[in-house]
Amino acid sequence: MRKSAISVVTIAIIALIAVFTGLIGAFASHEYWNLIWVALIIIWAGIFCHTVSRGHEKIWQRLLQQLAIPKNSQVLDLSAGRLTDLMMIAGQLQASGKVTGIADWQQSLEIAKRRVAAAKLADRVKLVDGSMTNLPFANQLFDYVVIDSALHNITPAIQRGRALQETARVLKAHGTLVIVDTRAMKEYRQVLSNVGFDDIQVINTGFDGWWGGPWITTKVLIAKRS
Image (tube, rainbow, N blue to C red; front, side, top):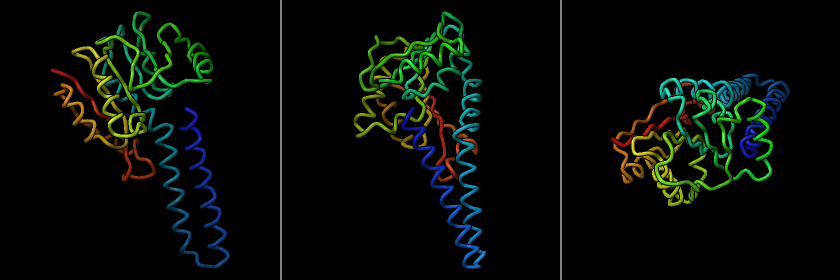
């Protein structure tokens, strides 16, 4: 959670500095065509901020509507401690259903628990310290596994493969795996095919998934075993 927050703040500060510098430079030199670059930076920053906030939320709202997760489902969330997705899923469940969030929580675990309790979701959420490459769960335990923007941070590629193998192990035979990410979808498809997933689809999220522009966009992979 902390790394994500720092990166967003850093990008916002860089964009503000670039806009401020561009404005000063354009007016000081009287080369007003440079204002085009300022406008492009503002547009880029606006699109980025939309994706980080409202865009991401809209992607998950559509995804949850599509998945129609039964209220008694057991869901594993491997999104590196991002509570927003986890709590949106928990809101779809009843007390017999549960979302288990696993991450390297460290000092943030108690803060996360308080946020979950404040949202009145504590009966449907379990937070566990652990690693995606060595999940502390029995085989075929979960109906759904979701990974949001966390898998590509695992390096090297062999470790990403290990994480996907662990995901396949803890997912029920007819369970559903959901990966939301901006890269490496071909890699994920290949690994999942090798571990028995034969129903794999990748969905583009459109404007809501643009990270500043269409050159970096969020995609959703949904995988099942027939």
